[in-house]
Image (cartoon, rainbow, N blue to C red; front, side, top):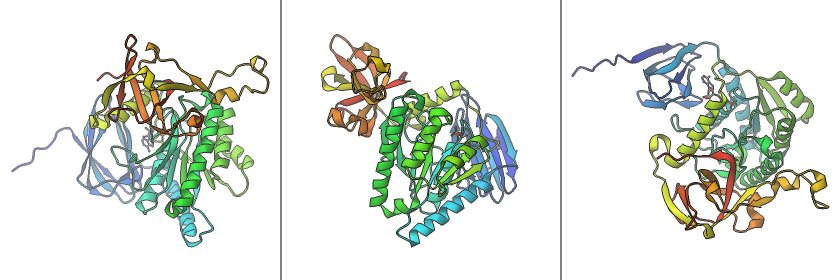
Length: 423
Ligand code: ADP
């Protein structure tokens, strides 16, 4: 039997310490195969002769420490081999963290490293987090990944922040295995939309991480890897400092900004190592539209899975069975507030939302809270979309990953994040 040669197949021979960078063309798929040698994608090893499919818009770097051959089938926007990468420096960071884990393993009075990755937008922060998580997981570690990037979080849908225990490398095509992540409702795409709530949730997540480390020595030794958002000035900077304090970080990796590096070196206590790292030349800048599309894709993936592997449910929920809130009233001028109430307090206040047709296409978090008092401090169980509203019968049609009825009755509405379900 003769094997047909695929005319669309392009072969790339990579020398050691180089990487193949490519971007999948809009509307296309690219199938990648490692045919010889060893290679990894963002720290996860490729299996030889296995076919990996990447969908529209995916930006990939295949790195090899020892040389390899890669075949690509499908339309790429760009595809080139880069010899100049910061991978050795990134590996050195991992090695230093691993040494800290070994120390924690030998001495119970020491805990594993907590590292925070900061820098402006599009410098490869999430990618470095993934690399560090994957390298740690490949050594049998189980670090906690904390994602504070509410616009482009990798562990849940946009508008949320939380923590995920990593005990195996991320899947090359599908990303992190989202086993029981601890997720909090923020409700906006940017921390600046409610800085007070953002900082409060950082404190809350830091408390849960501490509890987790107290109960699991493996988590305690493995440490934490904290991803942040690209807002690094003003309130964004204050939030970084607050997170560093709340999580008691040992190391801050600053990507691609000397100014931020020098500010943090000055403002952090001496025991915090602040390290400046270059960004990779492969990191692609994303436009507003690309970011919006990425958020939509992330939400769609939550309900439908990657390549429609999940089957969400649609069912009716009477108005009377749910209580809907938004967190944060508009900050009124102090003069307009009752005595003893500060303008900041209103930002974490619950605002009841009346059921109405205006909620169509809105995403709501299902709070784990059983009572109103617990809401702001409680994590969420999952998300639903209101797809239709029957105003006469007072019933919402909702899209949900699990069949009805809803596990809890308190729902929190996302402020500026919606989803049109075209299925
Ligand atoms: P940030 O978190 O700083 O906003 P990301 O880590 O999300 O940046 O990276 C932005 C984009 O660049 C992502 O789509 C990522 O897949 C891509 N990317 C990162 N590193 C590389 C690289 N070395 N080659 C090609 N693409 C890359």
